[in-house]
Image (cartoon, rainbow, N blue to C red; front, side, top):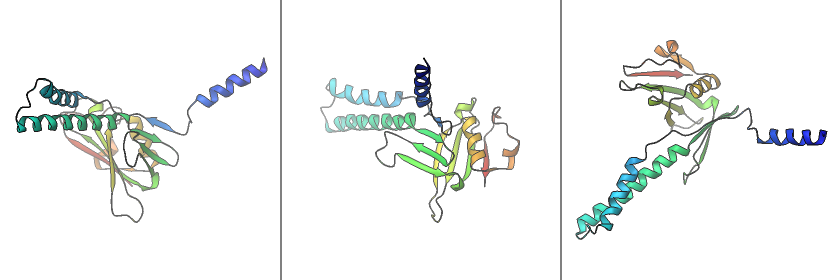
Length: 186
């Protein structure tokens, strides 16, 4: 009986994700534009509306743009932000190049919380995370929908300090109704 209990516990421990890594999944996306453009381009061929060169070229443009919109939405839906002790890992499985980026906490030097005047829900706000490798002049930036837990973890682990109005902001109760950018810096 003890062996069965030990085996069950070891199987449960294997299936539990690491407590060190916290995974934030991709944003929800509205793929209607991509589907509509793709369907319109295909419908032009099905309905035999492509007799002239211009009509056929327009149909092909609609198909290509529809596929590009769908691919872009797929990239954002499957993007994962993984918070570990070492740094912030950004993983995009459907990207053909650079699928995984690992940013050390010491190299993340700024984060902005962008609230537009029209935003009415926290999910409408955006965060912008800035990173720079030591000795490089290029700056990397990743934008993502607002998630208060992710923002708090980035501020804590990257040791960012509030700049200006960011010191008085409550991440669980954002002020809406006016455009604002709240910044945390090193």
